[in-house]
Amino acid sequence: KQEVTQIPAALSVPEGENLVLNCSFTDSAIYNLQWFRQDPGKGLTSLLLIQSSQREQTSGRLNASLDKSSGRSTLYIAASQPGDSATYLCAAAGGGATNKLIFGTGTLLAVQP
Amino acid sequence: SAVISQKPSRDICQRGTSLTIQCQVDSQVTMMFWYRQQPGQSLTLIATANQGSEATYESGFVIDKFPISRPNLTFSTLTVSNMSPEDSSIYLCSVGGRAGGPYEQYFGPGTRLTVT
Image 1 (cartoon, rainbow over the protein chains, first blue to last red):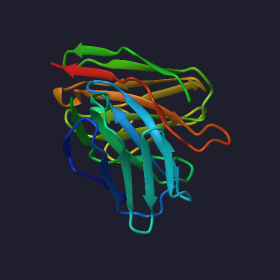
Image 2: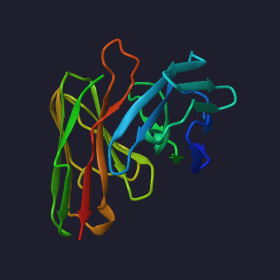
Image 3: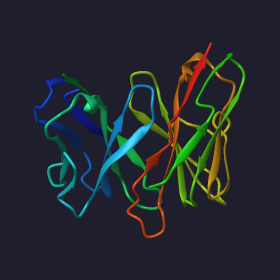
């Protein structure tokens, strides 16, 4: 059974700092891994999708990497801004006909101005 | 990407009643998913709803409690039946599986349900 864990659970950094969020999964047979952002009381915004055959994806100040063999993914945020404050979730897709997502526990990020 | 809307955005309901949540997508999609996010928790998949077939429920979720309809490729409903305070959660629908796509999932804004 796939289990997804994220560390740290919460992180507070000053504006401008570069930071890394970590995601671990127990079953390396994933189809893809997706990073989301969730603002308080809101739905999820898709940030990056990494296919199982890829090593990394980049979008603006965000870079996500994937290492299937070690069961890890990282989300790198460069030059953090107060607007980046949110909960960040990673989710592993098991593939097959259903493409179910198993979500991690989330990292609550606060960027202090 | 897909634009997804949900109705209602929030509701306060009495225990023992039922609430139907609607999910509308701006394009045809193969798969729709319903998730629950309990207070302070991450998301848990309730069921997968494909058009033209019965919904597939995850362990711990049953059709009598969470009946789902999927009448066409752009719409689905989730009903939370015989509600109790433990059903207080955010309910989110998502879509994925566009033909030829990478199975990236997109989420609606969620429905915040409070059961008193």
